[in-house]
Length: 122
Image (tube, rainbow, N blue to C red; front, side, top):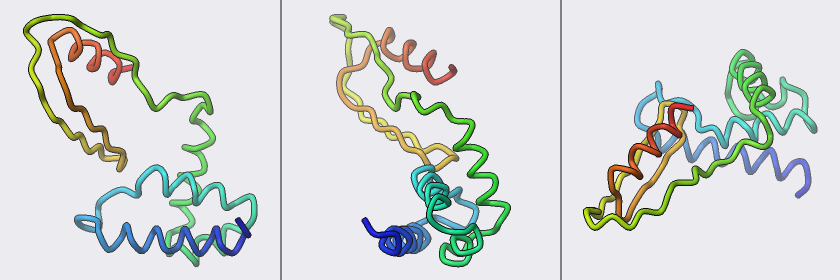
């Protein structure tokens, strides 16, 4: 994708997010932050700040967070498969302050929930 397309695509994504968020205090989603930081390989920080309508301190903070995040971090948590007869079907959607979301659905038992909670703590 050409450089200008990357910036304009991200500008559009930020505008869409801003128009759909619930209040001004909602944190910028991680995916948008990471894409903004990735643009630093092609644009100056002042170009990105101006186009995305963000502050310099925001971009600097996002850059530090992305740099400190290991590249091998998995977005998946491997959970045990249980054959317990006391499973219940549930649908759960979690929305984190970071803007990340997690959706769970299906048969859930106590062993699965305990494993999930332990994984989220680490």
